[in-house]
Image (tube, rainbow, N blue to C red; front, side):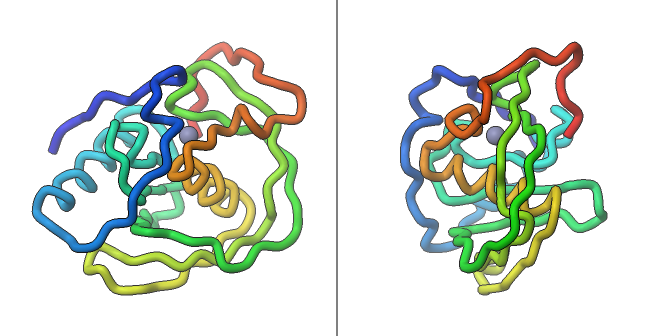
Length: 158
Ligand code: ZN
């Protein structure tokens, strides 16, 4: 259990493409635990491995529905609908922007036992999946905002 340092916008590591994970190791299991600790400590709803400096295709998401999600090598296999809403990112503290995302996605990933599973997300979960998967390809939500970034008074809780 450890809190890792969250890399901030401007750090090159956030702009790199991440590599697929081939097998579970104790090191990787520790990384996953640390990512949850780091995300909860920062009041985030998602965190991608490159945000803690690790270029692997791994994200954790918890939108507060009691169902934390570890996604290894995730791929969106279906998406539909559209939602416009505000987004923030732990790597861009104190900022928000409006981003259009699909309203519904179907995502295929491996779990912590390296078994394939499918997760479907709507609304906030669909948004979180899209946002976190973007990180794995070096994309930040600020690249997709409709009218740029604006400041928020307090760091966004979600
Ligand atoms: Zn982010």
